[in-house]
Length: 157
Image (cartoon, rainbow, N blue to C red):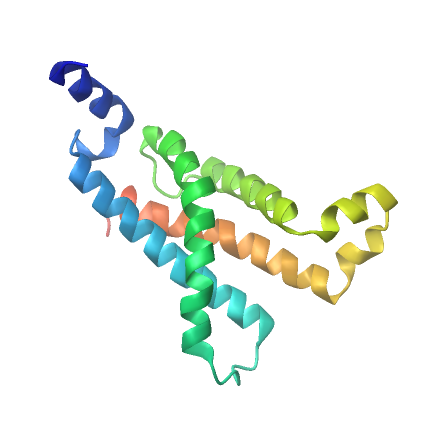
């Protein structure tokens, strides 16, 4: 490919950074880092709401790594597609992130397939079901907020 062709591809893939790939990568690394750390806190809080867990900071580091991998593989490509509109705090984007978060969480949850095949819908509404609901909503809203603040940067911030 010629350099002109690469430049055109860069402009079409990276509309929010005026074609600068380094700025695009810095912003998205920050997005995934902040979203992963926040999500790890949400996850740990859902497991230990009283905050008495002694190994909180090592567990925070351990939980940040898989959450960053999941965000990198799922939410990051979705954000590239959705960010072409350049509208911070878009409710349509939030709905798309909620649907994506629900699908990813259900694919990662090993009991989901059992619940679907045996139609035991009571397991959705027990205590662990509410924790999963909290994690599902928290993951989507968390990424949506960080994406709107870091990547889309509203004019008031």
